[in-house]
Length: 83
Image (cartoon, rainbow, N blue to C red; front, side, top):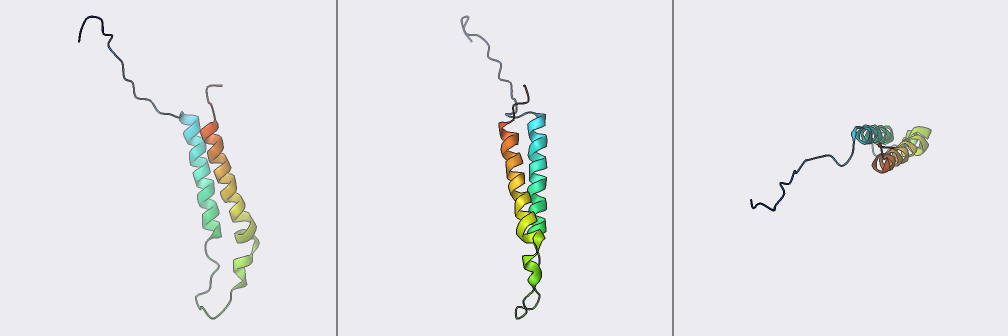
């Protein structure tokens, strides 16, 4: 190193802070819950129809939870914890 070069300090840091990651994990949990609620409702026999596939849980609640989880993820990315 020559005399007129300054030593550079390369610190590694995370892009987000703890609060951002906490909201991200909450969002992932809500999305996972939505997909778990959406699963099932089929029939073991392909010749019989099971009307449970069209119940409130699978048609309204689960997709709402998935969209809410994605909204939480967007909020977690845009959140500035320094304010």
